[in-house]
Image 1 (cartoon, rainbow, N blue to C red):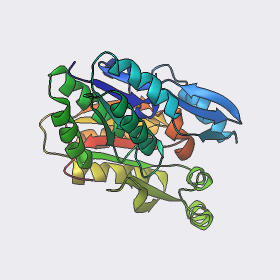
Image 2: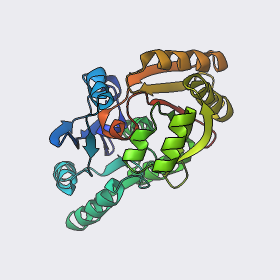
Image 3: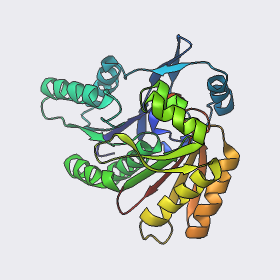
Length: 287
């Protein structure tokens, strides 16, 4: 490998896509009790976790501790390898700034080594797509500086749209106001959300009813997907597999040759979007 690739549990990567990627753990609490998510989405009990949230249990997340970056990055630097870390959006978390601070300090103490932090301007598999691409570039012996530039240029093409079933989870974590949440709940309004060019989560559409929100996600794919012969599309869900299957059918109707994969959504960002989150990730013309 030309350089080491790091991501964290929020990247939502299945085990078979982890080749060449180091995962950092994410910490959260459930009803005040500490939990560690190491990034193994295949062994994550999606139903149990989101059922807890349905039943009023409260999950809270925190930044990745700088000591985690120091420990994992130092081990790699001592092997004379450079590093690229794919971070969750600076618009929703301070993790990116924390990683940059650690990177600057470690490069000073390891002259000649290079660490690049990619701001994904997203979360969930939006990070994962970039981590997979980074590992591919490393396996092809692409120079780390060139790879860093290529990955930064790819960020605007990583499309990630999602909807939620209960907007009150976004209200609880400060993503929408209480008044907005109350009106949306009464009127059965479902937002279509995405990470904008600064990485902040905003609404790009609102529809009434769950079925229409799923159709709206498919419409975003129709509008934005890149002209590829065999596109890869990923659908992630917060314990709503039937809705994920419906979205997959709609996407397949638009792109019959698409390779579509359905996975569970990880608990870290899942704490903010709640059960019923349905997300669509693909490479597109732009966000």
